[in-house]
Amino acid sequence: MPVNTMIIRALLVYFTYCGNDFKVEFPTGSGQMMNLYEVAEQLAHRLVSIFTRNAEGLRPVFGSQQTFQHDPHWKDHLLFYEYFHGDNGAGIGASHQTGWSGLVANLIHFFAANTQESRLAQGATGNMPQAHTSVR
Image 1 (cartoon, rainbow, N blue to C red):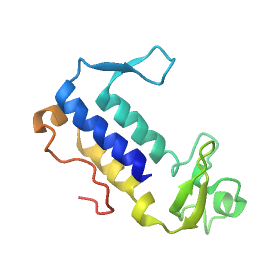
Image 2: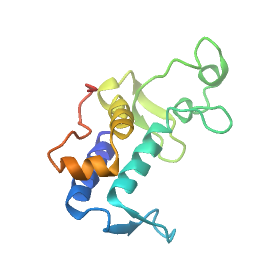
Image 3: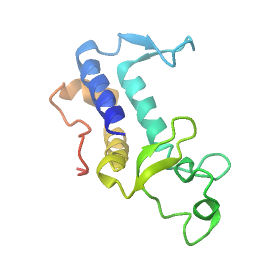
Image 4: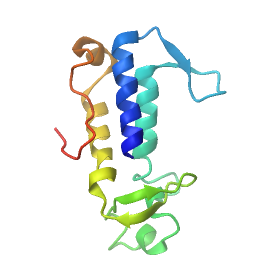
């Protein structure tokens, strides 16, 4: 989570310098071209989707833990893990790692409060997602 957040932040900084016209293929091999803000937003969405319900109503963070997936007393109580499984997003390692996994809240807030145009207007020194747990 922290490394991904730093990559997203770096993409946003590069976007403020390169602008809308600099595009890269994302995802690789797709033939789809996006500017760096769009790539950062897509990466943030992937991180957020670990905690949100998918089309089947399951949260990837809970993996195969049926109690957390279905029990009405547990299914809406999210845990923040130390690491996440690279293939399915299941939380692994220590739970209650809000210092790292809590960064997802910063990403949600940042992309809800900003647009490509506002990023370009604010420049590289403007409000950016921070690599700490406070949400502004």
